[in-house]
Image (cartoon, rainbow, N blue to C red):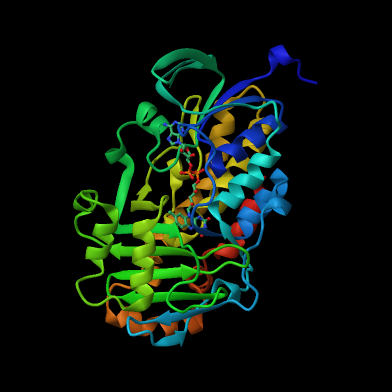
Length: 405
Ligand SMILES: Cc1cc2nc3c(=O)[nH]c(=O)nc-3n(C[C@H](O)[C@H](O)[C@H](O)COP(=O)(O)OP(=O)(O)OC[C@H]3O[C@@H](n4cnc5c(N)ncnc54)[C@H](O)[C@@H]3O)c2cc1C
């Protein structure tokens, strides 16, 4: 048994799914994680996410799978809808052979948080401002309410998302690593069904370069996602987000569904508005500092794998540190070697699959039902394509990750 004085201490930056999962994994192998979170409290809700096989397997190993709800609505159906309100049967996640669980991002975080041992220290409203390391440890200055403390850790984990402060402090500025895909997204929870949809009905309104999706849930109001193409991401961050979104959908009459969804975005207290970007890095660790989740490999929402990948990466990190006692660098090298092929694959999917969520032109819109029928879903389509070309399918990759831990 490890004595308290010999226990290793890790700083985990970020209380998202990847950070909480990392802390669970570290605690399980006898480490003392300390979590710092920039926000003043734990967030809830969020947008629609699906959890595929790799994420479910990692969640099971982390002991949180049973606490993650599946909010797929019974009899759920997704339509493609135009502004005039004409509906055609669309493609729903419920049709998938890999049976993903559907939920809100906050559901995963809540389940993971509930599994976190009560004595794991969490400091809210706290962020790192300096990270320096030597051969035996990492010195981190943490700031809260204008006050700073400096502490020493054996390991620092940057689980602080796409615009990671840990990455900026240790690896370099955002623009060295972040690649813009040329799309903006906005997402929020709707007060209830919109545009005459029933609670179990979802919808996709697809126009060249812009799309709006409504996702229904069994026991929660639906959420909406707007996704549109832009040549000038910087301009999108000027002015009110909802005005940028309205402008992206043009001056034409919105029709009932789009109009009600835009009004709901306008009235929402909480919403997400952001550009779609991917970090691309040659290495996810430097010495005793490692990036996990969106900070390291965010595949983008178009891959629908960010949460799954974050849980799988966090879970594997604990396993690798356990397998390489006293050799943090060796553990991080082995961890990255195991994960990188999968994350590269998911990132490639995140770029390729943007057209399924947001078709670029009329031809892609017209072809979508045909492609959807033959491929069933982008991720599956890619899997079939990879199988045909002899490379590993996403399902096989999920199994590989699932068994790696
Ligand atoms: C619209 C949308 C739909 C998506 N759909 C899916 C899906 O279907 N399936 C799927 O698997 N993934 C999906 N994703 C991706 C998924 O949500 C992310 O990949 C995932 O949330 C990343 O988790 P994370 O914990 O790594 O980072 P985040 O969720 O970004 O969490 C980072 C945490 O760090 C905190 N933080 C940030 N900076 C600091 C700092 N300086 N100091 C302290 N704390 C800090 C933040 O407040 C936050 O709590 C979707 C994403 C979007 C935007």
